[in-house]
Length: 364
Image 1 (spheres, rainbow, N blue to C red):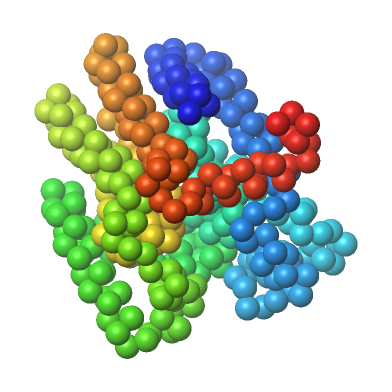
Image 2: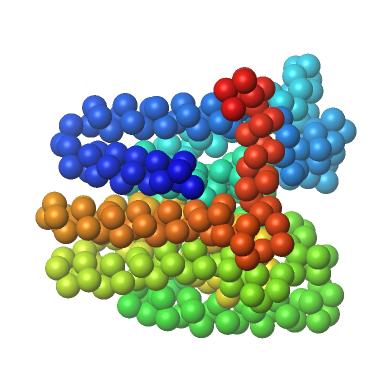
């Protein structure tokens, strides 16, 4: 708990300082230090939930895995490199792409990614294929919706789906983005979320999961969770998006001109697009891990966008409120499971990963 409070204070005051200082020097120093810390806490991991599965795919050069991972396995084997080097390659490339993605929108990489990694460290380091493809896919959205670079965006979409085929599900954002106006977007997303539950029940009823490749793997009976457990897991998602919904309404009363800005529309739609998968995560929590919480990176960017023109006192209050939401969300991941769930899986996995880093063992 003390560590979370320390990170909360660092996140709050570091993020505010970067926003309030006109110079980019302090921002660049903080951003660089955070990037280095992320790499230190990730590159040395030698044990995690999916480690043996990845190592098996790598050793056998198994074609049944995703294309990018398979081709990289062949390449690294041909260079007489091991799985550890391939894992580290994924970590480095993912970190650099995330840096590039976030800095398309804000200089405050420190604020965005510190909050993102607190909630996504275990997922992002464990699911190296998915979290390599996710920022690539999001860059595709960025270049398509904001820069109109269609050829580049198509290339990025293909590359992302070759990293992990389950990312193809998120391409439904493209027709939703173009055909649903902003004023109706959230309402139709919520209606669509109910339809997704109906579709999932049909898939279970007729045993169709095997026809959907990686996505079908998520729809196996062993991935079902209790409704109470699903609601618990999903509460941080609802808390974050609920606050952003409230903040958006209050900010538009002050700055109604935002609604005409393409960047605002992009951040609004991509942030609330993730709500499409929240109800179904009540019964299959792994879908929340794949299709909701990775968008936390955009929730933080969207928050910074909405508060960028507020006067100092009002902005500080909003930062404090959003910071409280981040620490409460982290407590749902790390602290509360000890009291309400049978086991604290997320904290146990975090401990396994951190203690597997040989150069940190003596320090810890």
